[in-house]
Length: 137
Image 1 (cartoon, helix red, strand yellow):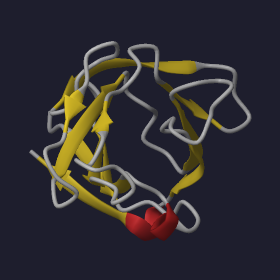
Image 2: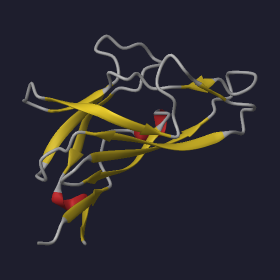
Image 3: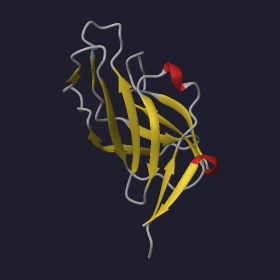
Image 4: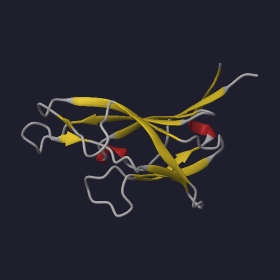
């Protein structure tokens, strides 16, 4: 039997004001992967730092089920952090979660349930057929 993987270029409001930016979401039977791009902000002398909370989760709108973070690539888990060397630095990182159902849905990515401006929370990310590419392996 063939395994199906969906690559989604999500719609999640005005991402131009968000850092990191969601690049793509990959829905697989074994995981949900979210790829981000992050540019070190100019407001810090050396570009600041990033990390992700190990309790980060995704959740479908209208559901109480949480899909837990299983793995983070190229971004450390809190309390560790990635320190930048300059405001010209950037990174791409991926978060792996438990697999979402392969259906149209709207999700939230929640790092902190009571967030501040430094937390990576994203709301109302639309995953629908219009923005999907199906890969069959």
